[in-house]
Image (tube, rainbow, N blue to C red; front, top):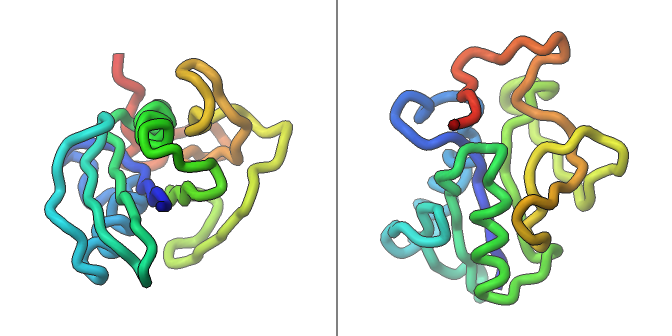
Length: 147
């Protein structure tokens, strides 16, 4: 089994926002591969299906970007999915629209961003910043942290 998590921010306000490209990617995978109906579980909207004989859990965490690892980690622990079998789609403000970058591992020494799925709550892993402008100004449609 693999988990494909699309990151974004919940709510209609952010639905078509670039920051929600992860949600859009997961929706397209579900449509193209005819996944089952969506339902709420693991602090996410999930859907189950198969891609070329491999069982897949699609996830759209409803925890906002900064807390998405808690939701993904909950599902990964339940299904005993190793971190190398978790694929995460998210926006990258440094890439032009329509561009795609795939990374196997995150580089060390980068700012902490999202919790790692295989770590207990509160632990974070280094990640390349995304969804933020280098000057510190938020991009249009960026959701503030809840709280």
